[in-house]
Amino acid sequence: MFSMEEIIDLAIQIEKNGERIYRKALGEISDSSLVSLLQWLADEEAEHAKWFSEMRPTIKETTDDPRLAERGKSLLRGVLGGQAFSLQDVNFSKIHQVQGLLKLAIEFEKDTVLFYEMIRSFIEDQETRDQLDAIIKEENRHAEVLKEFLHKGGNALPRLFRRNM
Image (cartoon, rainbow, N blue to C red; front, top):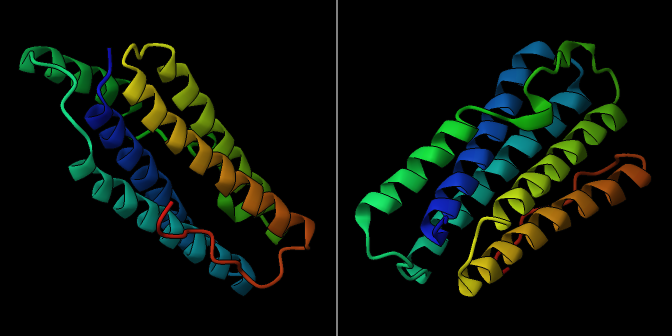
C-alpha cells in the first residue's frame, strides 16, 4: 500500500518533528549539560533527515498509478502531521538530569520503530519491506547507542549518526 518514497517522506518528517521538539526545548532548559544534550539530539535528528533525503535517488517507483501514490502520501501526512510521539507532551523544564533526557530520547526512538513496524504490515512489495527494515534497524541502533550512553552515566556525547549505513 505504501511506496518507499512515501516511507522516506514519512521518515524525514519524523526526524524533523523530533528536531523541532528538541530545539524548542532548548528554550525551556538552563542546565548546560541538558542544553548540550538537547542540541546534540536535535543535530542528530537533522543529520538523519538529511541521510533519508539522500536515499531518495536510490529507490525505484513501485506504483504506476500517480493517484494511488498521492493518496498514500496524503494518508501518511494525515496520520503523522506534527507528531513527535513520546516527545509531544513533555514539559522539558521539569527534566533536571541527563539520564531523564536520555530515557526520553530512547522512548522516542522506540516509538518511531513501533510506528514503522505498524506501517510495515501494510507493505506488500518485498523490496520496500527490505528498505523499511533497514530504516527500522537504524532506529533500533539509535536506541541502543543512547542506552549505552545512559548506562555509562551520560558523560561525553557520542557521535550517534554515521554515514554509509
